Length: 58
Image (cartoon, rainbow, N blue to C red; front, side, top):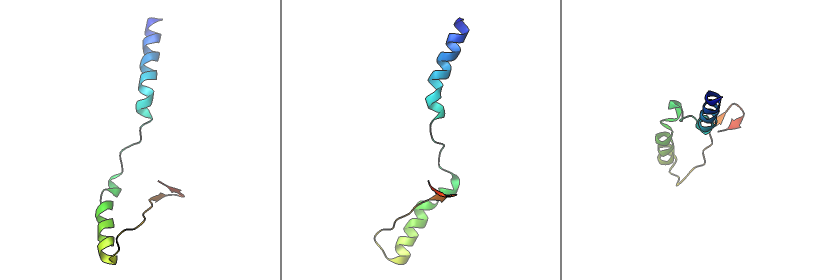
């Protein structure tokens, strides 16, 4: 009985840890540099950017 209670306490305490989002993918690592280059190339003060995976905006 005591082991079950300890197991449940640990399971409940670790549930929020599993709900965290994973770190950004390495594919997006150079995104900032690409955006800065686009700002310079097109000589504009700002742009709007959306990252789309499948049919959803990330």
